[in-house]
Length: 460
Image 1: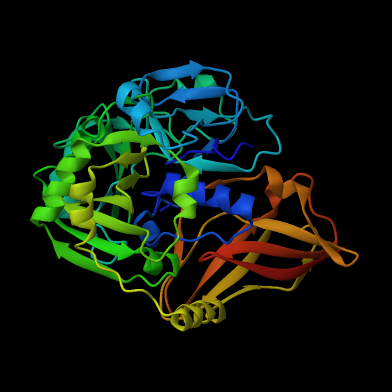
Image 2: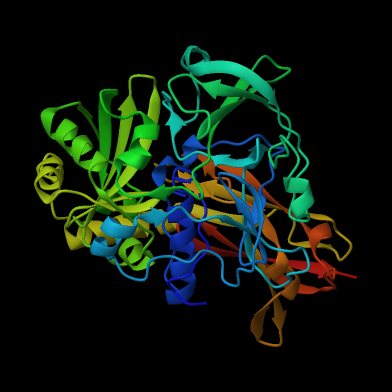
């Protein structure tokens, strides 16, 4: 695959607030064989246990995110900018990419999946904007209800990785199960809706969903007006690249100030550029990037990623080129101290020794349907992992990838393990075609940006 054509989704998604960004990180990591890094705010994006999501990968048909189902002939997923060409963007603008839906017979594609639903021919994808929480997970019901507008229908859990174009043309077809859909007060319903859940135990859940694909943006205001930022900011948090990259979670909260307001004004007049995977993954000096969570008065959080040089990355759209004066003034309000080399080395070593992955049983019959592994966190910070995994089989003295796992699609969801606790990770072997035979195997799993191996035996 051309490195400038990659799977664009909506990890840190963070993402997920950071879905695009995390997907780019995964693709780049695959090309360079470097460990993937996690995005701290991933823990904001809890999904219901029944959630599944549509495959985002190379395919032969596209869902128009703003106007129904399109038939196309797309051979390599999203086509993105190969260079940051500000002059072209000024005159031509950019078009937010469409979601690619592969045919089910496209075997061999390692796919990502995305929470979405269909309404009036528009496809709404889980938003990068989240509700403010007190602990990174728990929603305030009053905040949610105050933003909940008119009821417009209920989603159907009718879509999965085998769904056809016809399935996507159904009103309220979704990958997220059943949930009540509402408008969001203060936001354009053509671009933002919410899905609200009431649970039998008295609990509730709520997620925002956006529809931006297919839009042409010629200036930042075309997008940021829809996020309702100007005149609505209460405060912001920021984190340095070094903290983010090493999972240190050193977040500083700042009240709204003149520099922030001038920066927001510059966002509205900025030049949309689109995606650029090299900028995402190659600016890795300790002070090359800053991560900013903007909290608005309606208790929503919009996450932006700033790159030295006047670039702002939004996980749903891509890069914007911002006025240097306003950008630099805002950047300078977030001073970063150069880390000592030995401190970084110590931190990395501490993380490595604070995690373990082990099977519940080291030996199981070959007809076993489910494997259970335990992730143990003995460190002092939360660790994060996704639903993805792979399996390898020992053949002679070499570990070889199990071909059946190459075709699996995984929901884009983040799980966390608190300090001093454990979390089970289950592998459904019934999904593998062909089934596993007796032999020695190991699970390959990324946790907190590190790769772990856990061996087990299947017996006759």
